[in-house]
Length: 341
Image 1 (cartoon, rainbow, N blue to C red):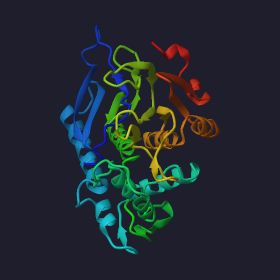
Image 2 (cartoon, rainbow, N blue to C red):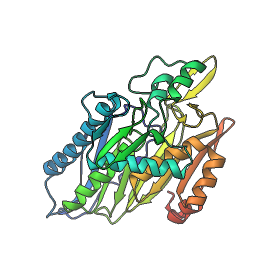
Image 3 (cartoon, one colour):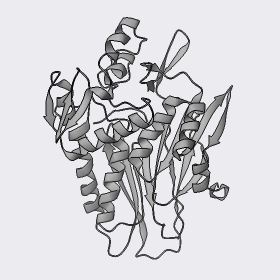
Image 4 (cartoon, rainbow, N blue to C red):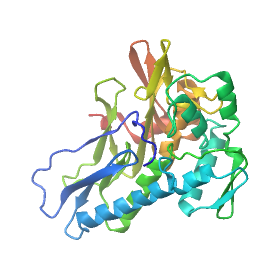
């Protein structure tokens, strides 16, 4: 399995009961375990649609392939074999792994280092990685040692091989689920499914209309402990959605809270007031990575970056005991006030 993290803010799918619809068109659903969590797929079945069993088997095959290639929770995965290989070594990799490396490099450069695929030594040190020690604040010496083993500049592609200059470990958990959504959506489309809502460990994408003519709607969950409340409802058609937050996966020591989201530039958990951020993009992979970038940056820097890059983003910031929401211009252009229910 991939990173068994509790996805911080899960977009809640909202299905309206179908009444008076043609029998030839109905919403079907299937799902299962994946990446230490679950996946769920809803789609409109028509008279010429493939069987549910075929769609599920195709989906499971894609997820199993991604797990075998990219999971840091199994020693026999391709990326874990690379992680365990000695300094200076190279390893042949499939196109999917190389694609994610390049996507990570683009995000790293665009964010000026706020995104980094090589943070696993630090994640483990702080208690949030696949080989984590107990959740405890590390010493300055431990942090310095771990930081010598991270950095996108130390991993490079040479033809169809992946090479490393230091004893680093690549971790795709910040973009793998979004990539998985895009892969599954691509396969469903190839098989003739045109209306769907695909959700994998909280990352999702939807397109088309339901049999009653309504779009797929998802709710953005308010960051409240012990409750699941949709604070804004969005109608989706052809867009992926990813939300990152710091209010579910953390530990406390000496009265201080330490988030699972690490800033690559400091090697430590974020300390700002941003509680959650949602990104909407045609590419769910990119939405997944950008939600991490903005979560690392915080509200002020993240908003400025998102506006500059034309990113559709929804920010939820702590203000005392309450939360304040802010959106980018691109987000409001996609979702007018009339989309809220």
